[in-house]
Length: 254
Image (cartoon, rainbow, N blue to C red; front, side):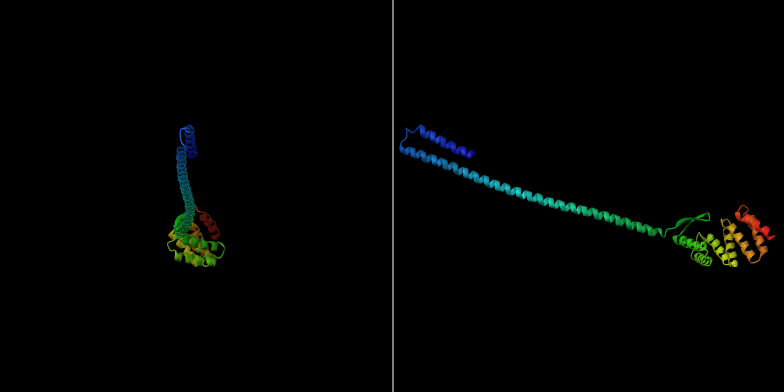
């Protein structure tokens, strides 16, 4: 627009000048004025062409720069998407690793717990035992309660051999003696009941053990020994339920 205005201004100025002085110049001077005007127009056109070319070059350069910038932006977006994807995968991997670690720790704790002593309360006594002790004692007692006295006897004997220092010792002697009594092994039953009373006179099963000894003595027809055992039971454990049963039994034996 500016270039067109400049060309128009030159032409207008030249025409006005030529008109104002038309009567003053000869033909040669008129031709010279026209040539000068043409040169001026050509110069303006060349300048216009240079400016137009420069503008086109600048526009092309700007477009190239914009295109490169757009490509860089797209590349950055692609890289950002990859980074986000990697972050998401890393987050999932960390979560999976944490879960596996938790499972491993839990598994180790469970395995350790299988070997850690546990606290139990049996016949009024509280003590620590190994998990294997607890398992085997309860298994032997379960067999006894099912009425399989022969197998229970074997299990309790084996238990006492494998765990000579077990906290179940006194209770095991009591149930072993009862299993032997049930299988009519009265001699061995008396030995084990007597071992319980001798070793642990304050044990909650000791009064019952004395009563069971008297039952074994009655079975083998040793009534004198049975009466003495019942007397000892009444004197030693006068407040026990076993003592009440002993008094009733003494009356029948007289």
